[in-house]
Image (cartoon, rainbow, N blue to C red; front, side, top):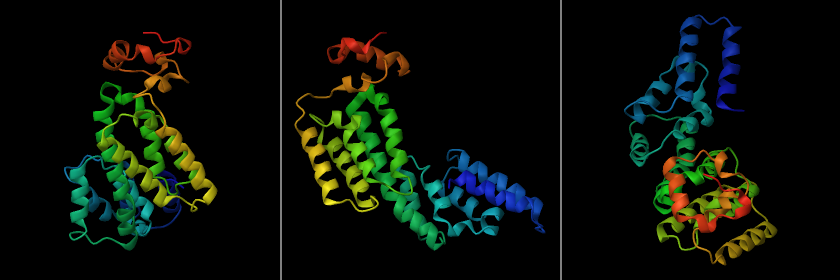
Length: 252
């Protein structure tokens, strides 16, 4: 069950119950819901966390005991300075057991995702946005409650694998860190058969002789449907025409 669904369920309980401070609780509910919907806007992540933990609705319904609510805050982190703040907050803020669990589980995932994002921007250059769909999918997988074998297989077959041959060691290390993170958190534990299947995909990727091959990106959807920026389109026209198959209907 998602955060919004859980909050709505609790609000319905509130609406049909007789709380002495019902008006304040409804107001607190609206404030809390906005925090979960909107991106981080406070100057400090600690400020947001304190606002959440002091929220009347959050305390009344004991949401500090549900790690999913705190995880939703951590998932909003998009820079390393914020991660440092969160680590320091362990000695500054009194977290519940569930909130600490969320920190321990989600922070490593945030780190590997940010590292990959930074290295992907350097590696792909003007073509970074071509990988945005896969990157969004990867983010959903990393922050899902459970990671399955099919997610590991998807990652190895994703467009990220087309960047591996000839890539910098930094980018290759980032991909390895992401895969390791997925592997550590996969549920249930993979079987020997699964392991052999993954090893086969990895070996196949390693044998690729073509360098960065963006042609794969256009195999399923025509370029005109990708909504690329002008910069990306120009870069594609100037540098990658030799990679585009005529059957893909490349038009600009």
